Image 1 (cartoon, helix red, strand yellow):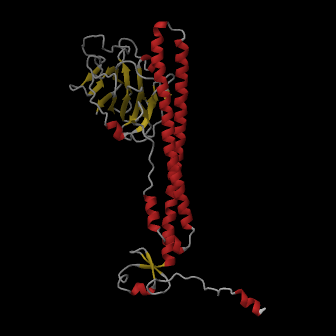
Image 2: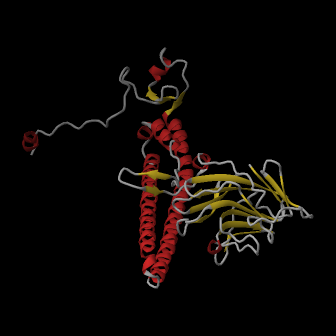
Image 3: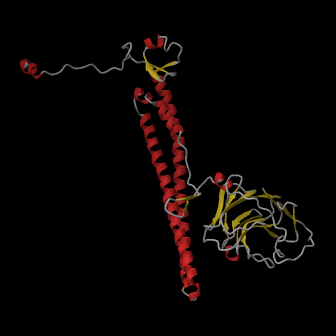
Length: 387
């Protein structure tokens, strides 16, 4: 049997591998905080590391493990925000699709009853609806894909951190700084709402959560038109401030003037392009209506505030806040707005209103393209100022 064993030529058993210092062949027992490297006791006494702060590797590993674990909670929270944003995005796209489908069906039903003279208009409107439908599809694909990519990235990072925390001491400390740097670079990027040109043709609309910079590019100077002002409204000399008084002024009753409701229009109208302005609401507790109105809006009778009557606006009144739709849509902003931002994209039929202080999107009218001249519209029971 001895001879048989000798004939096997088995290699001798090796002692377990130890991590030794390449310079001194001593066990690596310390961790240099300044150089972020493992050293031995001889290295610690050397001139290279003598003035550096060093820690036993077990203590260093425990310290960095705590730091890695501290990142897991905010990253998981960030993941929750992104998942919630993706869900809202999908719900919004579904709602927009339903509205467009309803508008398309209604239009096609009415067109069948029109005379041949309206056939050309039918084709024009039909093409615009198809463009809007494609635009909604682009919104859905672009924004949901962006959110999905961020979810994938965060999932991978969280998995790496969880794996890192379970590694042995030496493996955990290896490249620990680069792992922490990856955590610091994580930042949620919400979808955009800016109109961007494509190489092929037309434009696409993408939805955003932070429109501050985009809005300022289109800010315009809005002044109030005294020829449209209700007689009980007092306008400042520059047309940037208005308040409701208790006394009627002796003003010429022109066709442009509102005579039954405390309303006033902006002097500047528009039939194309993008425009943004801000309105400061004064005398908290009074009522305001802010938005845009068609040039054909009723001036002499009661102003009916709805898109069907040429008014797209929000109302703030007596602790209530809602959009003038049919029926009205109640709104519940996170912060009560005292300054409103109004953004109009005439060419694509978008009117969005924001809380100008936080740029929280309050409501968007986006049912159909505009086809008339629009003016900034204000109706008030107190006081407001354009800023």
